[in-house]
Amino acid sequence: MTTTTNMPAGTTIPLASSSSSDRPPRAPGLVRRASDVLVLTWRNLVHIAREPLQLSDVTVQPVLFTLLFVYVFGAGVSLPGGSTYADFAIAGLLALNLTTSSMGTAVGLSNDLNSGVIDRFRTLPMWRPSVLVGRSLADLATATIVAITGLFVGWRPGGSIMSTIAGFAIFLLFAYALSWGCACLGMVSKGPESAQGVGLVILFPLAIVSNALVPTQRMPPILRVVADWNPVSAVTSAARNLWHNPNPSSTIHAWPMQHPIVASLLWSGVLLIVFAPLATSLYRRRTMN
Amino acid sequence: MSSDSMIRAEGLTKRFGETIALAGIDLEVPTGSILGVLGPNGAGKTTAVRILTTLSLPDSGSAWVAGHDVVREAASVQRSIGVTAQDATVDELLTGRQNLVMIGRLSGLRRREAGARATELLDQFDLVDAADRVLKGYSGGMRRRLDLAAGLVTRPPVLFLDEPTTGLDPTSRVRMWDVIRELVSGGVTLLLTTQYLDEADELADQIVVIDHGRVIAGGTAAELKTQTGGARLEITLREPSSIASSALEPFVSGPIVVSHDGRRLRAPVRSGEGLATTVVRALDAAGISVDDVEVHQPSLDDVFFALTGHPTEPMVDNDEAVPTLEHVR
Image (cartoon, rainbow over the protein chains, first blue to last red):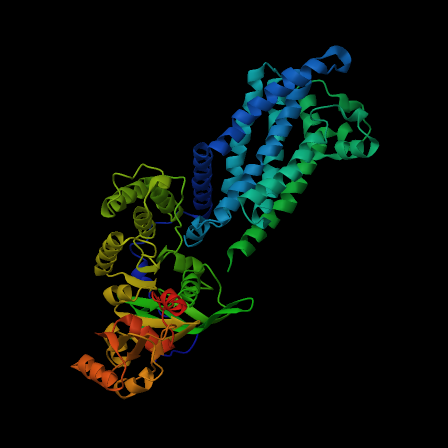
């Protein structure tokens, strides 16, 4: 016995009248989407501020790395042409900090997916991709904080204001593109811990096997090829050129080292084209069912 | 009646790998009424709710909420529903107010409207003092109330509550019931799942019982109780007896269940009047000594038992360990 009255499948009951009058007014598409994205960006930033570990990842850790490298390594490294290690290293440290802190996307997204909060979002009439876009924008905001810390250890860019800004822009674009890759990682990993673990294994070598912290010339041949084609090297070289900082890689014949700005833009573009749609489709698959 | 249905499902099926979560479910909830979906853990309640709230796609079958197809018109459905899922779907790292404002904004309210609505709900759900505290410091009951409030931000005409009181202490539970009753007096259509039979009895106009992904019964609480044929007899013997069951046979109206230790017997009976005395006399005559006889008026637990042949939860057998000790002695 059931309480069901059988009706032919497909008959739709007109009930629109009950849900038209007192529904909230909906702003047109683009505005509404931007608003959803901003709300979620704000939410993710509140998260970072309230989670001590994540907060230190974007505040204490970059400062600590920068100070350690500049004052400990800097004391023992001599650069050709007599320039200071700080001038050489700042761009590289920024690359290191941005690369490793993009792990926050993987961890945060994985956290969300393993809690009920994504389900709540999915029952709301909101723009779905805003969960991912909001996440990557929050990352961009923290990347900016990371970038500013470099200024406090005595580094000063040498170029014009425009080229200084261009250097930061290249970094931020790369960090933004990378955060989409990390979003994919967050979606395929079982939980926040494994996202963190796998993220570290991928991102740390990505940052270190590059020209970020040491010139690549003396690396073993295979490693040197990897380092010269590493997107982190391209971004770091581009920033060093734009900031008129010493850039030992400029004498290397590998194409990205000869054209670091174009190479970084290409790398960031490729990462975005590959990972943004992939993240969106993974998100759809992960959240349906 | 069907033209007034706010929620309707026809032949919903869903499987996860080898597990059949829904084996063809039909539901119908008239506008302004409460349907209680009753069933044990794993019966398919949550899966059904997830399909109706657009969180999951059915393998086959169709469903409409507020007149919209849950698969093809998911966005329209989302604009008509409020959902309180089984596990808390509120944001742990935001304050209560921030949660409600966020949900309001994501539902299309303007900042000021969202703020005003949050204040209103915090007041209604007695969360004013905790409004600006981060959720980590909330008790289970406060979290559930906030979760319920979160589902009401846009004043949706249809509400889904998936086990709204699971895990709550008795006081918070009764309080939650009051809140739910108040909501429905405002004309909201509600689908409520529960494993607690008293909860369905308290709140629902109509009840459907689900087991193994199928609707096995439906009706009002009173109708369901009639269906089971009345009262239930429970007897505790001094020691296990092999002939107790056959001695009881004349008085019962259904299968007799014997506990693992053989000392407790349970069976549905037609009438409660003077039954206990008659049974004791009969057992006495058969040479069986009785420790205790109880005749229970039917509860929905019994309904479930009568329908499925198994209890909602495994029969708690307090004496289970004791007999072994007795045997050892």
